[in-house]
Length: 326
Ligand SMILES: [Zn+2]
Image (cartoon, rainbow, N blue to C red):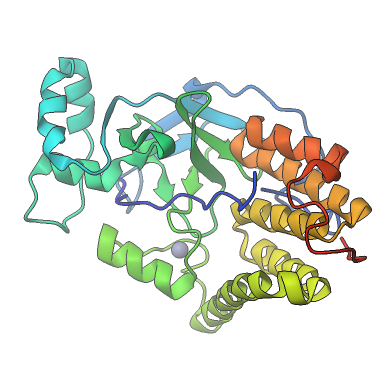
């Protein structure tokens, strides 16, 4: 069983909204430009892990940006009406009931009935629909603080999609970060309290001194994100410098799914300060990152359009004129 409850999504970028930084061409998240490669869901293997219950593994190499799988839910429930769980399950086919019951649940919430606990442990939000869904494969993907993939609900497709953030070698387990927006100590605490497990990923398994450094970097990242929001109006040069520092930390911590928001925010700042060349650079990075993390949908297309003509952004020139940087 993969313990997953109330998982937060990767926070979508503040604007349309992830990945590589032109100034860091050798970062592993981006690698050389590679075409989207069709990946066969049949190359995924669900099997028992050593200590995390079931997990999802790939039997072939996956390139960054690849859509690993797009799934419709086995069953969906209202996000805020648990009383509907049992009636909805009663209307399911015997096959879907069997699939639902094949999922485990964590030991917390012992007062709840098993159906509710399965939903709380495994279901994922289907954003705009106000529902949560149980996805046969994606809901088996385990947590890693340095994940190799990212999932999100694609409203246009009506499916949950899972994209590779980095090169994933054949035989490796697919992982996502359940709580990317939390820093290290907060994330480990939530994983323990809500999912009942101690993360043993490559980050959380670092020697104490190294883990402490990682935690400090993540804390710094949180502070930077808060600071940028303040500096946008008063000191945009410093805001862009802070975003560049945030990108360095994200790359160091290997949580590449967080890059899109940084690129998109930098684009917005440049747009708001009427900096055409740098707005184009940041929008181009944001568009490519969005495509890799979320697929080539509306967000990526919107960002490409802004990269072509930043003056069409609603904030264009809203704060004045200033030469910034990329
Ligand atoms: Zn971890």
